[in-house]
Length: 178
Image 1: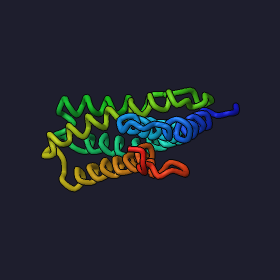
Image 2: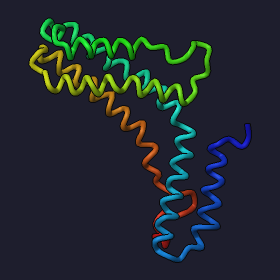
Image 3: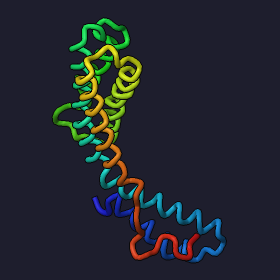
Image 4: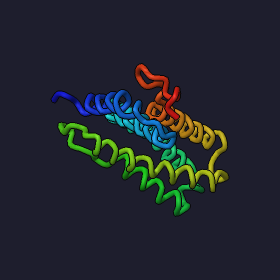
């Protein structure tokens, strides 16, 4: 379908920058216009990249989740604690949930739902591991913490694309606008 949604947003942003915001004289209005322009570009980038980025992050988060589950399974102390029994079940459920049929197109909604479902067990794992480090062998515990940190680093780098709009095509983003 043409124009695509990202092309429509790009056209709106281009028109807004060149024909609306350039005519503003009030400093507050200029500031609001700069914010609107930034948000339009952010939406454009999200339309272009959010699905593939979430798809990739959903694949990557499975590694630290499996590592947490394996860590819990390797510790008889943790394996008997209700918090870790529940966490192992939560991780297994998240990892084994069928988020779409194999032949279904992975809609952004389904990929985002999958991301949310996979991220909550990781949040709970971080909390539980932080509260009970003594239940695990130190080197195994550290390896799992590093796997979680590596995932978070990848996640932040991937999502940074949406908040680091460095320039607006053909315009200095601050010159005479704020």
